[in-house]
Length: 431
Image 1 (cartoon, helix red, strand yellow):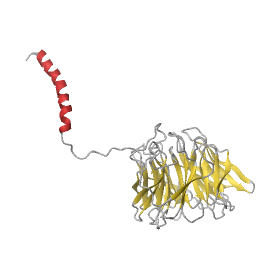
Image 2: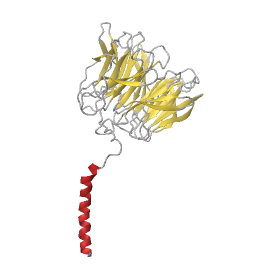
Image 3: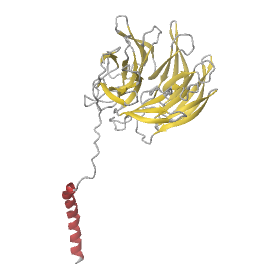
Image 4: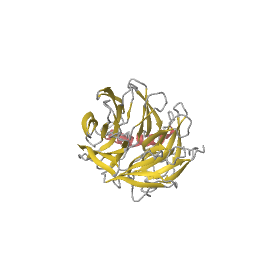
């Protein structure tokens, strides 16, 4: 066969073989079952535990940004209040129920540059609650030295401001405890930053002077919940670090203001999106566990729920060992709160979503995970609006003895609809 004929045959086969494969491949039997296609948004069966939705405080105007809500008896009158950090209005507000049943909002502290968290604590131990504000300085990514820890002492005439820590990057959380057992309250600070950050504990030296000690150097620390994680009688620190790495760290209090660090969990999925950290004895076995919502993808221009989003329970097994359990697959999960919603003696979990697939109206923004007592959780959908929820708290806000839910919205991503600010779902008790 001549070379010319060989070339013609090769060219013919180069067209014929792909054509035959294209026609014959569909006839080849499939090996196994096809994987289920991930479709994004999540919705669940409607809760059998009913709630009534209410707008609290001012109605939403524009695109509100609420970074944190909590339910606490702020003024010691036996009634719970709602304390919220409003980034849009640069203030910390209090919402309380009047004798007529109406919820009234008032500004506690204003002129705060992007408040991330308000810690309610009697720092000077005078019998009145003070406010410690974690100041981001900018809600958007920023690596400048703009963070602060601001202390607002409650006095007879209002609040007296002091800056306990500056010259740091964005601060996301502050918690108080007597870490060195000297009788006064110290602080632990999550310096989130952006490209640089750290975890500090501030030793109370007296006369409102605090000496900072570095526990960890890494950007992205969101929350630093304090508890006695090893049941040895003193208070330890946990931290979720979410920027360069996705890691959980604990800092074991060894006495006299000394700490030993333990990395108790990490993931190779650097896009997991750790969004916060809550401490609770979820399984009621006498030690403190950790609940980790995962679903923060604000860094994406088109944020969308991912198959690995949801909520993780880190079960404390002693000796600084924690076993991870995935207890929810809610897309875009951003915050969690633990409470016995159905009053059956075990602890349930409430979750909110920032970035579920909001173009389908049925997708969940608020769910609760019903605990069967053996830590098997059933997901129940409470609501699908408002959307873009980033913070949640539970507690009885209307004095009827039934646990309620309060959320806050962060409206930075489209769609700009079903807008919320501070929203409550009051339980009716008709289960």
